[in-house]
Length: 292
Image (cartoon, rainbow, N blue to C red; front, side, top):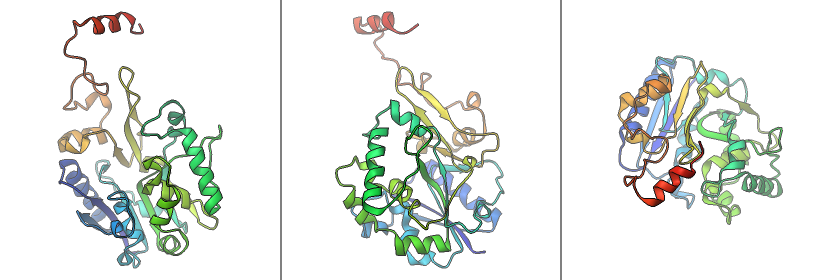
């Protein structure tokens, strides 16, 4: 089998990006796969008018990937756990593609509204996909649209051929989603929609292959969303500014419990830092009225 792991980055090089690429290259070597990293190239951007956001999906428009049996798309904020040698390409068994869900996101999108991303808009987006392309988008037990994360995706040769011949172009999708918040016009929702087209054979990958770390909520109730199971394989560190953190810090987040992270941040994190002027009348009143 001829397999390849693909990563992409545009912008100034960051220590976290460099570290992810290093670890993913080492992982590729361990499982006998090829590895490719594109830096500050424009490929997908030549066929869609949404800069940067479709570049991680370059294999869907770059014919040089057609020769591979399987292609893995991997974001540059994803890190393999120490010594990972389980072969992600072995997870596909005739399917066109494999991807993990974000199992808690349908709930979070009912209580938060970040950048216009919420459950109500999710449903409107799913309806648009159904009306225009015949996509039957899956929902959870409470009828909330599921959320799939393209930080880790595996695509077979047959699946890649279907994407190139049967899916709408990036630009066709972007045009059809005009009027939706920007998030819904980007690659993650493009991919999430069309893996549910009739005739596309999707595999839901076990969630240990994309354990996402993120900040849940905002000050003064923000928490760390740690979705790592005991058998975590690939850890998706989605904290803002994390690509500027030292490699040893990113290693600890990937492999250690939260109590051992020792992040290079203010002690209130993941909340915003406390106001410097704690004697102001506003802050005194806030402290009095704060939930006990």
